[in-house]
Image (cartoon, rainbow, N blue to C red):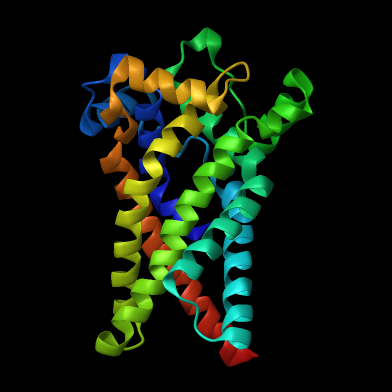
Length: 267
């Protein structure tokens, strides 16, 4: 949640770019930032922050808790897990966390996308709980899990890349760098880059499925993007994605490592 407070602006920019479709084929990150500043002001970059924080409190808490539990269990009973086993642990953790966090994810996508809609079509959710309540009342309780399959697919890819590569990078760099913030920073930046490259295609599909007014299949969305915008459109918004995932990964693991250290000193 602390990390999200820092990277929320780039997450909003990334979402806006992913929803532009063919019209935004030549849009630049700088241009999108200028448009948001002009239309919504500086605080416009923090639209949907409550949903972003609620998402971290559900999805990220779940995925990291499951991954760490699996890692410690395996290490205790079978020794240090191999890289493929770390990837598999990330897949399981991501899928479980994503199911719990999908309602917050849907609310976040809608709230961050609202500013690009015409005033008469905006949903104008007041906060994440208002968004969840209105979706349940106006569209049915199942709308809270709209795009759940796409969300879980993305989460499996993201967590396999992020958690697996972080643990592997940390392990590989530890002998030469030693324990400390520098180690956590380098391992996090490696993890963030790989995660961005692997996750963008499924992230774009997930974003468009969840922002749709009616249920749309992820395969149909994927084929539509490729047909109408080209294959490279699946990596639209790579710069703001890495500008978000890179620092978010760094800050998340730095905070986690420091909180773990504090916990074990007090335990």
